[in-house]
Length: 285
Image (cartoon, rainbow, N blue to C red; front, side, top):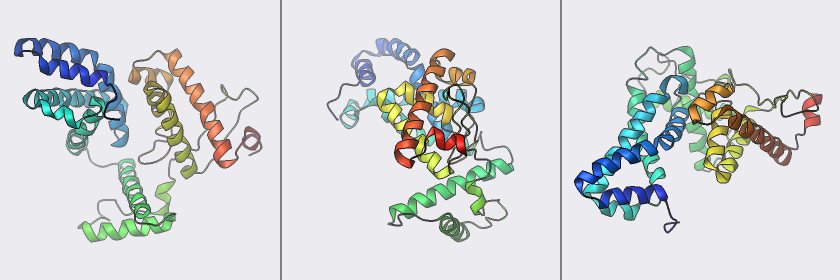
């Protein structure tokens, strides 16, 4: 809602209200305090652009921080910009997208395309096409229909998609995508080797991250770090080590482990409620 108090926006409003000398000091103080916000935005940007966070997170943090500085300068020049902004963090997230995409197209994309990178690109194309078909009224396009529509568009819009390694197949939906595993430290009654279709898994993970984020932004970010790469565009099919998640989020390993456990319990509930899958079903599979 437009009248909801946003402390970050208010901090920027305060900066804008200062004289030039005071603004310089205030911006520096603000930027230091916003470091964790930059990290969280950058992590989401890495994920949505298929950038491995362990290699690109620091660069993307700097991109977001630089964009924030530019936006503050724009607000100083035109304070009426605040009339169009509800949450400064959301505004920064949206305004950082093009800068990060430019980074992807240059620095991050400078190396020759590997087989895995091509696979990630095909998955992005397939995901985009599926969403486009759904928005056009096709309720449940099959994998084959999505592949055919994607390849048709590629041949229509690209000079030589086959040479670029972009021609899609149904296998692209499933290659290297691991099922969602419920780890033993949550399932005390024994190891539960869960096997769930990648489409269902993606929906469960997305729903869990959404619910977690409504509970607290930190909870949502931690679940995204742990489980965001299991399914979907450019998925690695792997759950990162807790030490890596702690480094990415700035939290302690103990806090990350606690939130991971809560997230897994949440996903168990969602799988039971949405698909009728219980721990007994997993144990029997």
